[in-house]
Image (cartoon, rainbow, N blue to C red; front, side, top):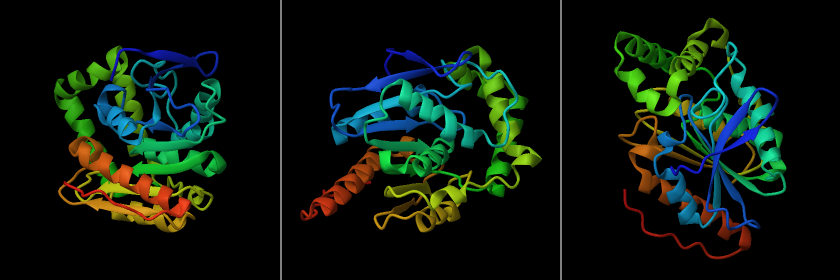
Length: 279
């Protein structure tokens, strides 16, 4: 991502870093990108700019509280942190950046996809589409086990910490442990946001790798079956892990663009013409 970083103040103690992409289509929907549980600007790589350019739309990326250039976490994270992101922080960002009158397409990865689903439930009229990549809607043991292994790896040498320091700087420990300790805490055992799904009216494109080490296909099935749109689409990808948009960026950009174009054409009454796909 570029170096043109701005900050939005959400309250007296917290500023969040954000970047716009393009910002030349004010009458069209805007893509809002929501990063993973240990994510940042840089960890998106070139996926956001490629997707915005493919769709011809503007984009917004921001780093959540406790991540990257944003204000470091100042308290212990609680098990309802994703609800807080969807109920409080994302609405504040949308409002402060004066995007509350625009249609929004939410693009979320992992924790970010869970936040996207929560927001889409609460502000359904504003959301045009939700692109959910490796979302969680309930706690799954595979996720807990993988994060426990990640925590051991982080503590056993400084290699992983040095990687994360490129993105989270001098608050890497607080960023990492807020994520790892929350997911593996006993309070998180019964975490579940499936009740939000029934209020989502926007079409959802739910994407996941078959080899995702943090979740299984039952997450995708819950999202698709418990939300309302008849245009919901599921994509399970062979030989792919937790980050399809990084592992196979061009393929995922194509798939999202095809989903967008297909639903747009159906709603406009036009004949659907698909481009040839190449994995």
